[in-house]
Image 1 (cartoon, protein in one colour):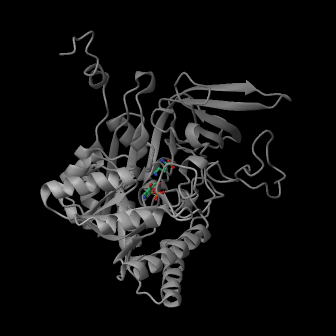
Image 2: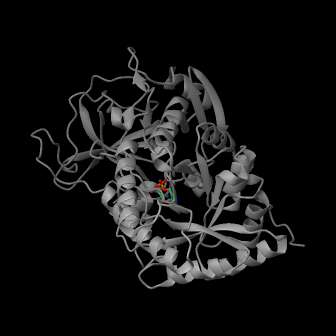
Image 3: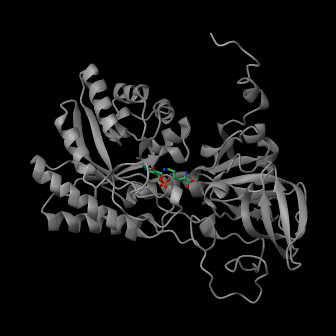
Length: 471
Ligand SMILES: Cc1ncc(COP(=O)(O)O)c(C=O)c1O
Ligand SMILES: N[C@@H](CCCC[NH3+])C(=O)O
């Protein structure tokens, strides 16, 4: 689970067989503000609106499924991080969701951009991000990707293996440049999140471990290469994390490493990155930290450690993706079928099938991620029934929202909105079952723009070459 649902006191109205944390809502039409982007509201006619546009209009113009990004909310969150972390650099983690327009907004809002492949790097550059404001990650960067980064003059390449240190050194030498590099370390922090998105424990593919001494070896290898300009240490402990404690432990450990190498190299590395991973609210139980509180906690640790270890505070940076773009976007689906399924013990669960699914949001299937949903195209006065919102794919695990109370009169043709769908949804979409991927549209002050158009079956067929001889 990406977040644990603790069983609290069970409300008298809790309906079996739902999870104990899910309570019968007093008003099934109510919106929990923490889950929705800034401009979302339910109009007097009961229709959900975002950026001043009713979702019924958006669905009529764009079709469904569609991802609807609230532009005002994006800028508020981006600037919120920049302001809270003033004096630190905030890299937007492009893997969460990146298009040329989003890259442009990131720059306008004062963000740097973190890319993890040549593809993301290309989008960032096309979107107008200056090379020096880009960081390149990846545990297996190709020569072509490293070359592209060097030619674009990226501000930092975050190195992840000894092979790569040699490779970057060679490619930089070929170009007679010095590559600015950071060393990604694993701090041994066990982040409380799904195993697949925790990245600072020892037994996984990212980084050099501090405990084994490999991190220091990697720092030495970079320092010794005249074509590498070692600028600092990088740590990323995982994603969708709520407790600041993990970040604090990681920050302490890398400050200690920073101070040790300062003594050994007789110079203090000028920069340090604490990564991203700040959690957002997907359900009513999630209580994310504000950027202000995160900033205060991290600043305090770094300053205290710098003081205790008698080093300067380096130029600091972080890399949030989900916390900036996740809450900006709702996924809008249309209901196709509604089915009552009788469970052991006689209770029923309503299965609501929509026109998307695991091909546009793999997170529930991959991480057991929980989401919320609401009836979006109208309000309902019917009672609430425990429901499961599922997709249209040939998989039993094709679940979008495992447990949610939806109005009992939900019917084919209704619109359903899923908040918190901006990060790692469209970005991780696939074409499973030959389903074309949905568009992403941005809305602001009643005006819609397409960021990514809807894929068509012709786009998919363009890749199908029949039986074409390989030259
Ligand atoms: C190195 C690195 N930085 C930043 C991020 C962004 O994480 P999040 O979107 O959870 O903030 C990730 C993804 O987990 C990552 O691997
Ligand atoms: N894709 C993950 C985030 C981690 C990936 C980035 N290292 C998710 O959806 O939660």
